[in-house]
Length: 263
Image (tube, rainbow, N blue to C red; front, side):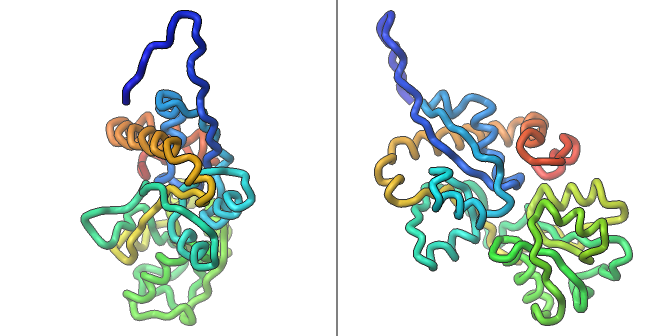
């Protein structure tokens, strides 16, 4: 990045305002970290982040409604494009370039007394997922690998943030979703345990997205946004403890020591 000094008395260039959205998930922390560490401002952007959305579906609805201009989303983007939403992939924030199944931030968590010890034990059980999201795709991948069908169990459509509560209360026997909700459940729901974490059942990819008309008008802004995000990624790899602390300001109910397990 090339910077120039403004003449004495001259006003500094105004920061470009961007309204961004994220999902309440550990792998979405790059945007809050970039804001917290001043990387957006460094690149000439004034970024505001909406209250984290429960799922990517909710975030895409907000993007369509004009509440935000850039978002981060995975599987729901595919369905939105197929239904005619004019989205542009600006960049990639999650996934692996070297392996097909990059689902290490996903887990299937069961409660004590559920009768579940292995994937094959899901038959006849109630499992919470968020329909239309990577959570839904993950459980479908698990079932396929185990030779089970969705008709062999009951899938309960549940927002990720409510899954630990549903597990504690016995409303479901297990849930499948992304961090931090599995690590929160392990910390807060006595006797809960991971039946499986990751497993290579699906390819987990996440994308920075915008609506096409906005993207075409703001190409330089998008490049700066991605540059700041790249700096945030580097920071998160180098400073997991500080990243965990930052995460607690954005993900409700998350404690630093619990967040660190998912960072």
